[in-house]
Image (cartoon, rainbow, N blue to C red; front, top):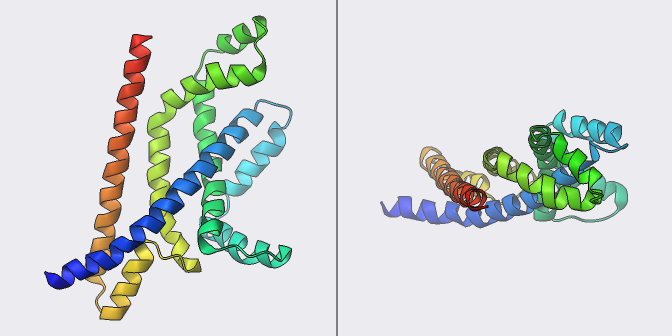
Length: 215
């Protein structure tokens, strides 16, 4: 039991790194994803579609490697593991977030765009105050799923030395010549985090529904 507790403490130290990577990556992802989703309805839609296709058609591990190894070498700059991870995961997530938002935008009645245009509402305010709030409310479950998927994908950061949950489990296993218990503990950590994310997502969804019901 004591050994199990020691293993758990060693691996749990990676939770902070994983959550920081998740938060940073999703922030970048939701920001870029929103921009990509909106630009698909402008004259830049061809370029936007190609960027999204490029990101979605290449492995995440390749994107992480390019941002951590190739780009810094080409530009002569240095990125630490966390920064490179946030950029890579954010760019990767943005492609999927943009698709989620696109589906939400297309589910709205076309008349809303036409009414806003007829009333002379600038496009910026149309998107910010009318379209996006409805879209985010409608696609919230899909965004929660994207966060969960991104959490599990953070384990890829270990290939460039990030000390996330998975990397901590590997280190603990190698030091003690025992893999079953550390890997089970890592799985349990991911399970707890996923349950927590789902709970928060459901609470936000309930409050959103309650707000719309009142208004």
